[in-house]
Image (cartoon, rainbow, N blue to C red; front, side, top):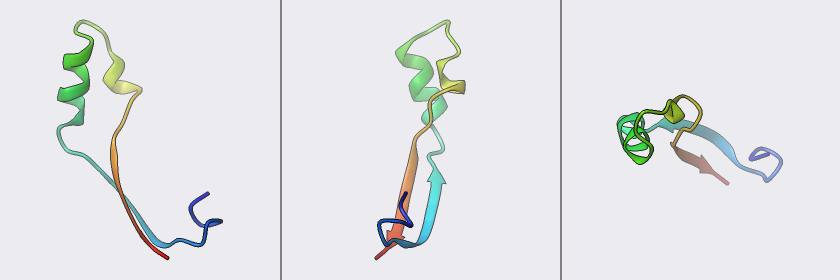
Length: 44
């Protein structure tokens, strides 16, 4: 999708502490295994 939009040099960098943050939203669940957060870098 990003390539079709004309973006190049696409990098997806996972955020380090996201599992801790997500698990605090809904304690006693395993939501952090299904939700992720990335920093997206690209050039046009």
